[in-house]
Image 1 (cartoon, rainbow, N blue to C red):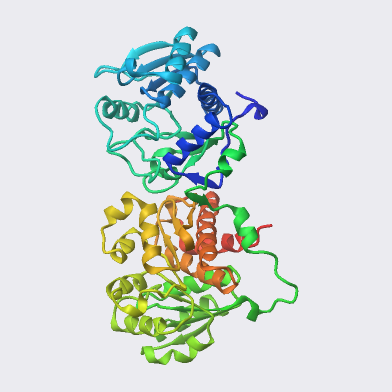
Image 2: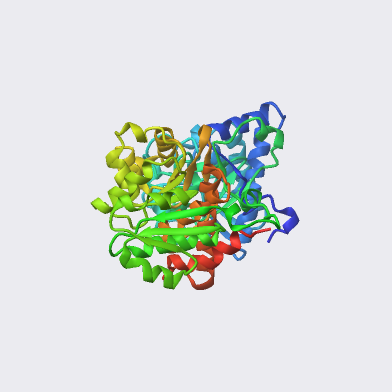
Length: 508
């Protein structure tokens, strides 16, 4: 096992995330402008990956390294050479015409041969055997679906039942979008180099990447500073900067009044959860407008809330005048009752968070001129709702989540959260944020209601639309992770997040 001081990789991902073309530019600048030879970068990548492999699988001694013909394959050859030099048994399975290997990758191939690695050309009868399989087939330059022998090789990796380390990116995954390009390697862990690829954190990627690590390859900070990232990973440090300690003179009026509107018949729990979440992140006052039938249940759960039961939308004007921030949509339904409430809300100029059926109603009204440039709202769609808002399809949204969230923000202004594994946030001036927290146990009813309440409560305390959306997503997802660590993912309920939400907004 490598010592901590010798490690050239980390599990702590950088904030800056890049598209594949940008990482290639970073690579070029490191070589041409800062004098780092290309083979040196390749050698550092192979060393970092080999160190990670030894730490993750300390008992491993037999490696099966699948190499393509590009620089990704070159990284694999370096790993094979290092393994042989360390007394391992490295068997290289070549996919694609090895005669096409050139440049630094060819040098790495020759080094692996000199160190004694065995070589085999992949074929229909190739059996992948070893303690660990290294995927060094296809890198970030893949355009279009996987083809030819690479399809069979990826299938062989996935059927091998061996642990898999993916070098730079699991082969077949789009590094820009996280979409599977026909087929992709399902890795146990992956290590990304120089600039962390934005597609590794969203879309289908979380199901294929496994645990993600990063190695900068000692590329100078000056290189990274010359190129703006495509997106930013939300960190707990952002939460601390956006949520500073309160003044000792603070009172409830300083921390905002959130009004949650929704909860049609049979859906009162939605507004109750949103209201409690708004309070748990620190809003000063919480009001709820819902059906009269839900008043007793909400007050029994959270007596701190002020609850108004209404049967008609025209009964809410005085409540709207007292509020600072509106959270609209949890359990609101699509009946005339919910439609009337939403129309009353949209006639005000109050900042709001719009979720659930509020988004579906908005999709049906999107041609109305009064909605076109509202701007002071946060929309929180899942892919299906996003598709309706864009008059597109869920498949199209999922194909490129970064493009979809940007299109939503351009169309509706304000800030937009595109929910799902690797939630994305689009803010003003093209800013994109990514959340790497969260877990599959959060795929249960009520989680979206809690998120909308969190964002509303943060808005009430003075965060901008973009900050509240990004911080809200991070707090929500991290709370889900902490709750799952306590008792497991299965059976995780939305209200299980509440104690952790409070702790996360008090980080110091």
